[in-house]
View (cartoon, rainbow, N blue to C red):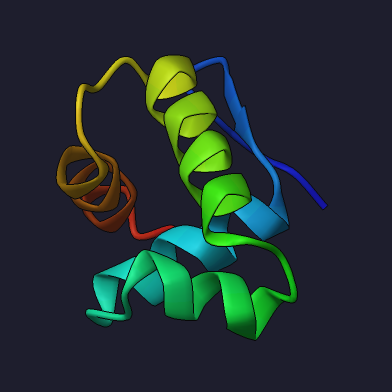
Length: 70
């Protein structure tokens, strides 16, 4: 299920990734938990940031938290 916010779609997997980062989990550990590489996590995170129009992972987490998505 995708979440549509202000014409921006985030998948459930995107939100899980952001929620893990919000808890303070490192990118590499997020990758291990999701059974993907740290590089893939970084690439997905970059895509999320591009879609929502922010520059950093911290901003992406804050964006999702403000909208109560995580």
